[in-house]
Image (cartoon, rainbow, N blue to C red):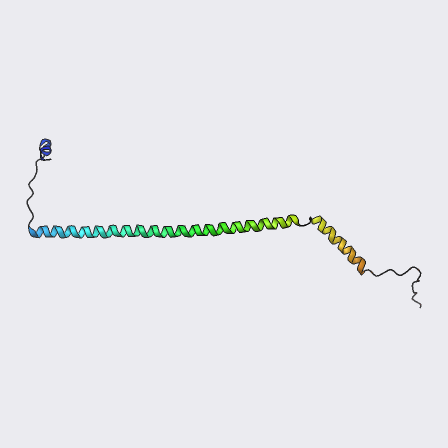
Length: 127
């Protein structure tokens, strides 16, 4: 590496050693920054994990709601089929009205007073 730097024209600078106090201060600063970085990274990871858990729970609730609605639609489809079968099995509307008219005629005949026999004369108001 030194040879490459010399070929490129760079001159290495001499780095003087740090005294004990400066080294301790730089170490403390590095340790503090590392602590802040790790705490921030940990917060990001925990927030991401919390968000994923919340999202997974929300998706499970939506899936459960869809399953409930799908079951309800299936139940309603079966009920609709049963009602359609009942409607098809019922007599046509015209036949029902005809039966009602016949029933009214029979009721009228049953409730009508019997006509008097022809041999009896009608009473006159004078009598």
